[in-house]
Structures are given as structure tokens and as C-alpha cells.
Amino acid sequence: MNSYAKKKFLPMIRELKWTDMHDLIDNYYGYYDELEDDPDIGLAFYRIKPEYRNEVEWFASLYEEVISGNAVAVVAEEDGRAVGLCDIHRIRPNSELDHVGTLGIAIIRQYRNRGIGKELIRKALELSRGKFEIVKLEVFAVNSRAISVYRKAGFKEYGIFPDSLRRGERYYDQILMYYRLDGETG
Ligand SMILES: CC(C)(COP(=O)(O)OP(=O)(O)OC[C@H]1O[C@@H](n2cnc3c(N)ncnc32)[C@H](O)[C@@H]1OP(=O)(O)O)[C@@H](O)C(=O)NCCC(=O)NCCS
Image (tube, rainbow, N blue to C red; front, top):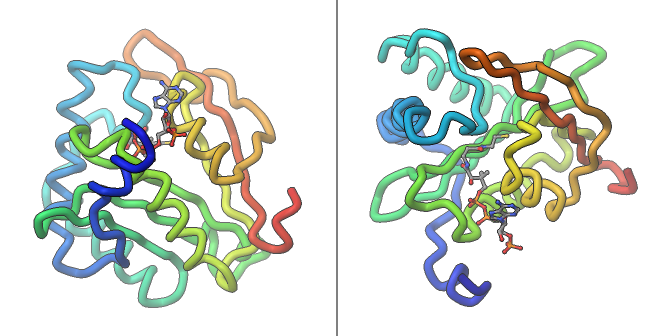
């Protein structure tokens, strides 16, 4: 798909709302279902699928972090439904690590590769200015698409964590990346 087509069909990119909770929880369960088709899916899962109430707690915690200034969270919305989320949250508030945020992102399968990831990250980094100095992330070394998006957004690699994720019999390396919001020179 060319960049014009991507832009034409780009959904609304906006900040998280409380009413996104059910969509985002449904999306999360969908990623578990994807594991059957794509054993390499680039998200780290709990060994037992969390119960719905655990997911409500996760969402409430994220929402609280946003309100208290310890996170930014951006959603892609299409036809009134949240189809993707990018969040950056403070690793440890009120500590010597409080200038660093950790980024996570996931978009439901049918909306991938349309330029949404790129836009979610752009908006999340924009909202992070003045809140964080450095944003970091971990990405599966096999997740070429995510790595490509992060590199294009300006993230730089600073290492590899070998075998950092164990899924069944298989171990995955993760690439460690960071982005500097302060001066942006790397
Ligand atoms: C990773 C993810 C967030 C990226 O978002 P996206 O909306 O699909 O990505 P975009 O459409 O913005 O950009 C994809 C880019 O990767 C490129 N790309 C696609 N497949 C690729 C591949 N296999 N290898 C390298 N590059 C690839 C595309 O050409 C595009 O680049 P372009 O904009 O220069 O054309 C999304 O695919 C996703 O949610 N994946 C599943 C969950 C996940 O892996 N999350 C990341 C955890 S670290």
C-alpha cells in the first residue's frame, strides 16, 4: 500500500478515554488468539490468560497513570472502536529513573501495515515531550515490522537481550532500543 492510500484510510489518533476499556481488553484477548496462527507474535504474554477483572485493573491502572502524569496513552479509533494503543509509562515514579518511559504498542491484526503504528508512536512521543527525557522499549528480534517502525521513528538500538523470552520450547532474543526526547541526538 502506498503512503497516499495509508493516509487516506488512517483512523483518528487521539488520547485514551475511559470508555476505551472494553475495546482494549477485547483487543488484548485477540492477541492471545493470534498465538495459534503466529507463534512469533511480538508481545509477551502471561502463561495463563488473565481474567477480565485483571484486565479491568490493568486498564484502571493505566488510566490512573495518565491522569497522574506518569503515562501517555494514545489510541487509534475507527468506526467508534479503539483498534490500537500505544502507551509510554514511567518506569519508577519519584525515583532516579523517573526521566525514562517504557513504550508498548499493539494494533489489532486487520489494521496493521496501514501507517497506524507510525502515527501512534509519533503522537505518543509528541505528548511525552516535557514528561520524559528518554523512551525505551524491547522488541522481539524476529519482529521486523516493529523494528522497522521504531527505527523510522528515530529509535536507536543499544543492545540485545539473548533468550529473554521463553515461549514453549523456543527462546526469543529481544532488541533493546531507546529514543532521546531531550535534544534528540542519541
Ligand atoms: C508493530 C506494529 C505496532 C506496527 O504498526 P503498523 O501500523 O502495523 O505499522 P505501520 O503501518 O505504521 O508501518 C509498518 C512499516 O513496516 C514495514 N514493514 C512491514 N512488514 C515488514 C517486515 N516484515 N519487515 C520490515 N518492514 C516491514 C512497512 O513497509 C512499513 O514501513 P513504511 O511506512 O516505510 O512503508 C503492529 O504491526 C502490531 O501491532 N503488531 C503486533 C504487536 C506487536 O508486534 N507490537 C510491538 C511490540 S514491541
